[in-house]
Amino acid sequence: MSTIKDVAKRAGVAISTVSAVINRSAPVSEDTVARVEAAVADIGYTPHGAAQSLRSGRSRLIGLAVPNIANPHFAAVAREVENVCLNAGYTTVVYSTGQDAERESQVLKMMRVQRVAGLIVIPTRSDAEHGAALVNQIHVPTVLLDMYVDGLPYDVIKTDNVEAGRLATEHLLALGHRRIGIIVGIPGLATSDDRYAGYLKAFAHRGLVPAAELVLPGHFDQGSAHDAALALLDLPEPPTAIVTISNMMTIGLLFAIRERKLHVPAELSLVGIDDLEFAGLLDPQPTAVITPILPMARRSIGKLLAQLAGEQLATAEREVHQPELIVRGSSAAPRGSQSADG
Image 1 (cartoon, helix red, strand yellow):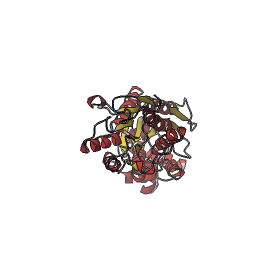
Image 2 (tube, rainbow, N blue to C red; image 1 turned 180 degrees about the vertical axis):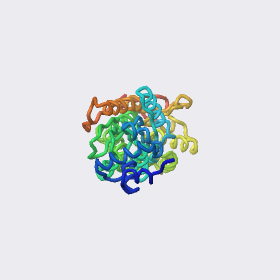
Image 3 (spheres, rainbow, N blue to C red; image 1 turned 90 degrees about the vertical axis):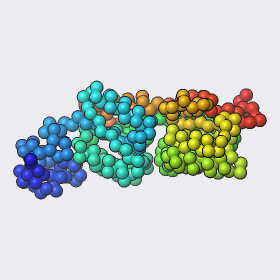
Image 4 (tube, rainbow, N blue to C red; image 1 turned 30 degrees about the vertical axis):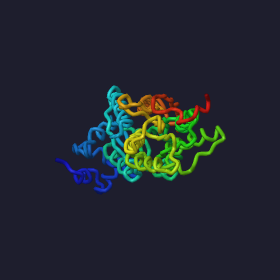
């Protein structure tokens, strides 16, 4: 069986140069790349399963990076991308970043090793510094899903997250709630910041300011949200309603409500952003702001495949999809009051 040492000898370069060409981990001249790829093809070397794409010069693999594949929200994205890719003659590889920038970097390196043709990425951060790091790690057509990153040249398919936060909060304000808690995600992350901005916007529209102690981070994590929910519920003057900005944090809130033996919506109303797959099993069913994640996933893979086919060029366009409020049984007017709009 041939080795990377054999490739280096055949191409007349160092082993480290062969590794740089295969992994796309360092700048290499076009002439050297051609010599290494010719050597790989001549001797039949298989670099971690990527030999076919090296020989053909064209990969049929799409990479998908999501925060947590165990989250049903992102599992649905993966299924949708996989189905569209299969119909187009591509296969997919999916990695979870754990919402961690260092792990995201490792994931992108693995994608290079596997020589993906293109990427769909839900980024771990949205600031310009992170964008500068990502642009040096991504060397194939890429579409960003559900969140933009400042300074990146890639198309973005995302939800209007400010509107999502506004819809959830305005619904509760219209019912008469004023002490509305919110469990936010990760400070500095666009999705979290935008949904919180929508919460503030709904209050400001009515000339109101929410109490600062009613805002706690849940880090998009069930356990953290559970702890935040208990802290809110144990306040001397607890909220009469709570907004959660992700499905996993809604689950954390539901566990906290059960521990405190509260009745929903008689003692506490709740609205979650992003729906729960098992919402129909709950009594009452939770009111939710639905984000169109499956249409967004279809659009993102459609754009990526069009770029790979040479039919479109990336323009750094932000395509924004609108969320929808679904009113169910978990939200009602607070005890002893009438709705502010009725």
